Length: 138
Image (cartoon, rainbow, N blue to C red; front, side):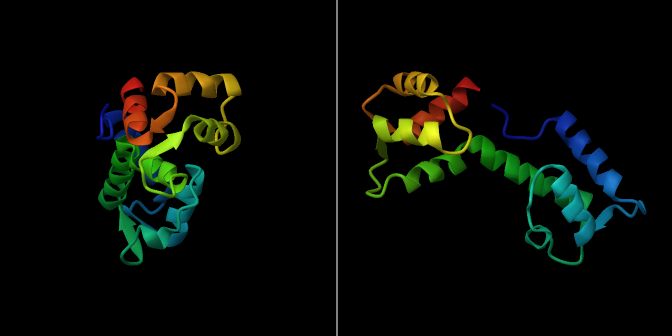
């Protein structure tokens, strides 16, 4: 699995950035960055991405690259599972995993959740190993 943006992804970001850079300055202010992020379906607050009043394309692209790498690492998913592991044991009972997968976020059907649990080995699920296995399947 690639942890770097593909050339096509970089080109797409350049095109989107250019669309909002109406004066062709190579940078966006907070208002334009907010509109860009909303157009991509994200409600990220621009001030969390900017150190000044403007952001240039290279900085924007690096932020997107960092976000992509973090998503691809599975760390965010592992952190989400940790919420359901109050003892910090690194495992979640299969019944709890099924409840989570069928009721929260992008839900699975009970049959899909059962298959996922079978793929993970059933019983108590080591969620770090489970996420790593799921990453390899994509």
